Length: 43
Image 1 (cartoon, rainbow, N blue to C red):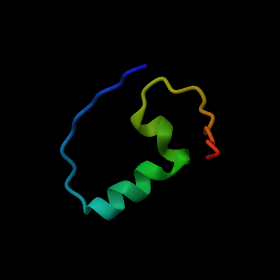
Image 2: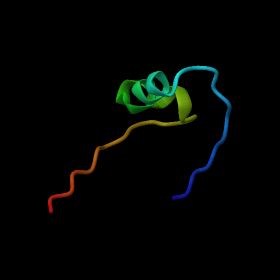
Image 3: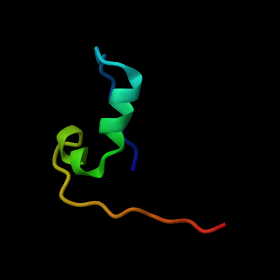
Image 4: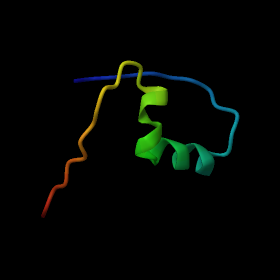
């Protein structure tokens, strides 16, 4: 799956990353998201 979107955000980068990295916020920026499952890769 490939997904691309671009917006301009008037906020500090650290704050944007903090919100973006929080899985509880995923449905706020991914329209139609029903669920997600983190993938863990062992090296």
